Length: 313
Image (cartoon, rainbow, N blue to C red; front, side, top):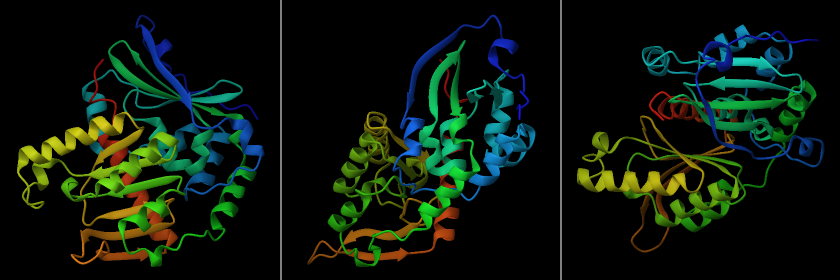
């Protein structure tokens, strides 16, 4: 079935603007999907998203899965700093091309497709002074059978023993086997260095790592720290994260939380007991629905705070 094309590509709308490609990359080759790849991270929207894309129902895809996940701030600033392209979808035969000058389509596809987004190729660049992000979705993953396999794989019981975690060393060992880690922490001055170093190492090795926090000016009093110290910690984290493929996002944080592969949630007080390395408080939540919803909440915050409108070339 031939998919219809929405003619919203930059060459059509802005024929006189220079386009500069900064980098192009992918995490896994789509040929690996037919081998012994074990899916771990799924999205509850995956099958619905694939149905829309397979049948060329791009308008519904944009209405339901794009605009509903993009915050109103980005929607309004995308128009204010226009002309900008919020999202365009083009059928290229062997792949679908998703293009945006307002949102990071890699985060969007990770949110919507889970592990399937690893087989998509991405491109960063500029159209004139406007940064853009492009995704090349191979037709090989536009297959509901693959989506069903994703659900089967992620339903399998894994070997994580979260209830036995008592200290930072045991937590780090658990994270070594993860494919997606979302860490929400209000006070950056509380994050143990051993945990931060492991998150940066995992990001460099290919694990999708998000650290979600609040702006220093919002929390320095709560964190019992001087503002300039919190700003320095935040700036240092941004610099180190950018070198290790770790994304730093802004959101409201109620409590320190770690979400692993959208299946496991750990609520933790990083304060350690004086007589041991054990955490003062740690709660493991084995509820996939809760983990999915919480992960999507933070990924939507990342889609908002890491928007492209705020960057000018």
